[in-house]
Image (cartoon, rainbow, N blue to C red; front, side, top):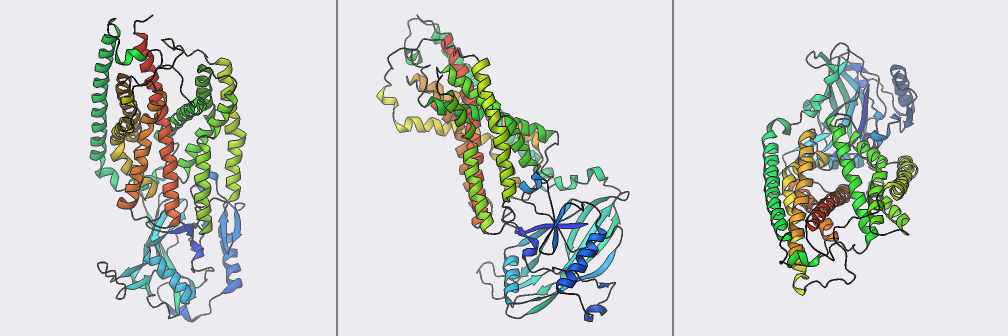
Length: 597
């Protein structure tokens, strides 16, 4: 049986609308032809009688999922799973009826009289390259609703162009051992209707045909693989591996450089008479930072997001989460995030207690619980409100919103509290600083307090890691905001690991020069420097939106910039947390080798 989800402008994948919000057929005619149009003069059922007849026949032929349908505007709407709803799919039964192994040479769907308003709706949609998405046995297929020709693109003149509507669809269904393994829909250009003159009422005859064929080369279990064989996979592996090789070389270069730095610091630490640079601030380097609650919550939240990222990559590598299955990626992020909330609070409270924070640890738990979800909720409510005001199916219904809020309130937040309590009882409260902290704060030299001295390390620490994933980010963006299906999660996992390593190494290099300047304020600087790649990711999204894509409109713009802001924030927290932990080990190591009283 066929079902239909949406139609959408090709350049705006998020901006999806109900298929039957356009003046297509609402009730199918039961007149069937086998090669001629002799029955066109017969009376065609219209109105409520035709609608009831169509639904009655559809009800008799559909025997599956009988309890999962409700009536919506003359069609039957499926009740879908949470992942399908999160993906923005709103499956409804279409009026195209197919019988297994029953070829249809031509069948009339209905006759629709289109006035000026309806013609303008179709013409505007065709000018914006609207396409539709349909399903047969959970296999997707796509097609355009029309086309235009003779457009003077150079001069931008539309006077000599013609707009055509495609009223006839041809379905081609492949089977293997009495199971449907492939579906395609094509357009019959010979039957197109010219709707250039919107002031001339037109009667359009919507029809379809069906062709069944045997496809023995494609087994049923592998029927989804052909959607994964997107056009960039075979030809772009070289560029993928070149980018990975470049990232690996950068990692090796930074590793060799940092090994030389460590060797030099070890030598300086053993020199008893040399008391300059980083050795002079030994009494201040482990002085805990200002806004310690916010700092600890940021580190813990980043650690949790790191765990979520690795869990998601493992699920993707094992094909538990797949971009081919509608909404599985979104659920593959939400569920691990809720189940790992205790990790974030445990890391946050452990670090906070080591900083001698005892009375306000509950505030740190609450801040950890809301630091990332609140920005996500704000962006979601904004984007969802915009989509809802435009009538897009990408807007989540209120029932789904309450479900997600309930999952967070009943699972995520309690687990966050449990993690914090576990840290107070079982985590070590001793920071184990290798040097004693002096009572008087050492004054930082005036020459190192300028803005330029602080901005350059941030730029350096953000740019180098971003360059390691620049090429891969282009493919990921094409999968997120385009129609290419990204399935190379092995390469993505390797690139993500290299990103973390390079970000940590780059922030460590910046920390080394900061210590040489006798600047002991390293806590926040290592976190911010490590997370600066998130800012570069957002900057690249601006370039991608304006230069690499043709996205436009309020809905698409709101979704793109809103959710890219969330993604960039997630990378900022993840890389900042990883860099801080790496640099903390570095600091404890070099100062533990220092000979001092």
